[in-house]
Length: 353
Image (cartoon, rainbow, N blue to C red):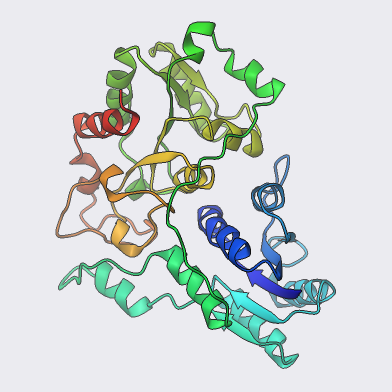
């Protein structure tokens, strides 16, 4: 059996996007075993650990503690030595191609291990996001770029790019948190994940709440509100007081339990964020809201379709691949121009409400 070392250190959403690729690769190449190196994120389990170890066979997860023992060049050398003990490897596949993995690739290359890396097409990214003379065209989807690395290594891989519904059992703790009356259990569940890391990727809260309120007013679905502990959880608790048939999931479940819940959703409503990719992992349809970023960059969730994308085309967007740059107009018009009614209509069509 061949043994591959696959590296995708971060971020959470990008790691999640790689999972369907790895899953389909293993199905089509039963003679291969993979050691997957990715960042360790603390909770009940590192997210990459439950994503890979629980859902995939012939995958061993190796955590990288990039802020602790694997920090800096000395730490990367430590990571390299630890990973090498899991070998030998027939090849190293870098699905990230950043400074850290470049250094690690060099070390593996010195051991005469074949090394292959992702091609990000940075020139096309710059052309897509520059202010003037933008070249707006669909770039190669990231899952296909991941698959290309496996193909470079000499393996056959054809991606289905289809959602694969996987219902995960709900724990007793999850059912206790949801506390669903019997009448609500028969309604379709709609997930609402209104937050993102950057302002340019976040639909304005007042507009988002207006859309959610319209969906809730129909009374024909159960709303589950997703977010992080702290400010996001507090904000969602305020929303819940004004929304019939709504439950706050934020801050109450582990990441693994949240994924269980997402598998039971009819639709997940999210930004261009990790929740869209988590929905793809369990085959749940995602309605996604895009502002500073654009699906043309290739980051639409695996198996998700453009008809479920909510956006307003503007000459200035996308201004960023990852949404991290502040709006040069200081208005974030790309998000403010989206009418709540447009989002509501898209959700209704996707969820068949």
